[in-house]
Image (tube, rainbow, N blue to C red; front, side, top):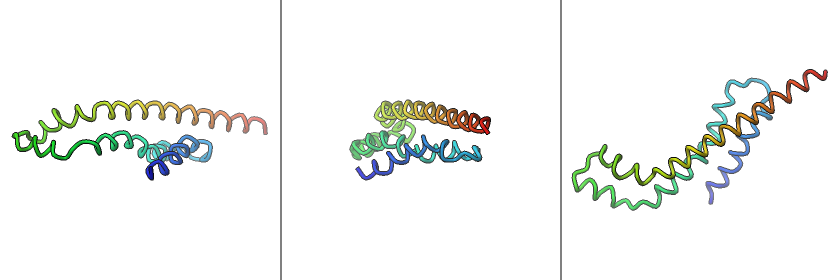
Length: 114
């Protein structure tokens, strides 16, 4: 619940950033990525929180190395949340690009009126 207090305003700020920063566009994608990263990790962290810690210990006792645990235990468990985070990143990237295009087109139309 506390993480949502960070995620929602940060996502809104990332989408509104092109309208707020009208000068230099160089750090804009970096700032947007930093603001959206808590949202992308929220889905994955919620899934990892629900996995019992004894599964890793059991896999170790059965002789699974770190690569085997990653391939056969962790990746199947986090595949769906990882795909959802990737889909969310693509959607937010497209929305950020649209906002950037709208901000740049509104700046160019304002400049041509004067």
